[in-house]
Length: 420
Picture 1: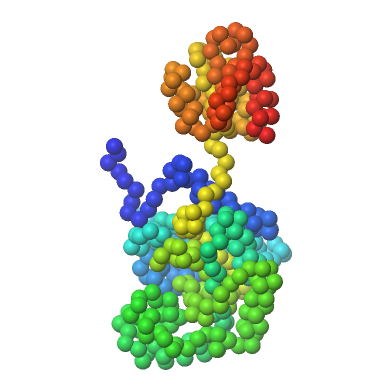
Picture 2: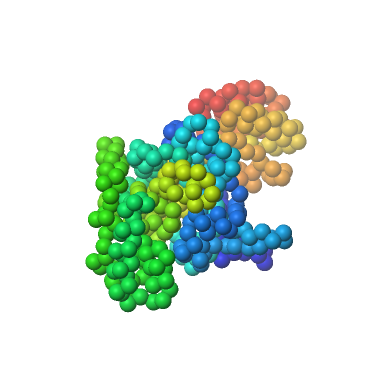
């Protein structure tokens, strides 16, 4: 046994369970690819200041959870705790916004890192699929992204998730609400750290999960009561577009995402079968983020969906994904000539798109057939010296047990026909 183990709060993806994660990533990405979103991949680490400015210096992510380090050259870097800031940085650096086709629509998939207390559904290393629409202020974009996420989850068979929706206002109306909320929070019995947070970003206090804090927030002013006419109209159009698409949602006036860059539309996907870690994804509009990180004004909207939490949600609902067989055909050679012939046939099957595997290691028939069973293959091809002398191989249907002699030169066409 190895003396090394995966670091605390991380996990390994190992077959066969890893196939679920691949299927979830594909299901989330599929509607994005069909809607004009192009794939983007960014480095696993970035300049610390990118996240400090973009995510927010008062957020738990930056103050407590970010893995930051200094390079030998003196650069201050951090493992990426989320995807939006990195994707926007890459789009600005590549001048994608100057190509004349706004919004720039991008999707991504990768691993992210936060130093947190490990528990089920909350890891220090986790996987997300995300989407960003950069450079356009349009309620239809906000609605599009929510609808696409709903479509992705339903394509997986998920039904017991809820969409929470709110508006966080903009630079016109949020300062007025911010002042009113601060006045309210100053009258509460809060610890010094929370009071300090209330002065920097009072909306973050609303996101505090501690029961002692939440009890005191009863009666706190709600942002919806402070929205300007423009934000009210914008939010109402988002709601109407989502409803018209047949997507159910719940208005949640207390919903505050844990990142500073959100404006106007904000939303969260929750699944009540996951216990305390009920959020499976979320996002919103971030119209000022580009300017925060040194770019031009580029109103944008996006989301990220957790792959690991989506898998947990599927398990909570008892949804079994229809995963493609890793192996459809398993070849068992008996003797050197059979090894040469069947290996060539396996290679030909693979070229033709048939999932095929081979009995390696010169095992006997009994051991090789055990491997064939374990592989899950629908058909096993067996050949020995006598079979080859007659110009045939034995094709066994692993479900029915029926075995048929097939001509060596016919086996590929026969298997393609049977597997459809």
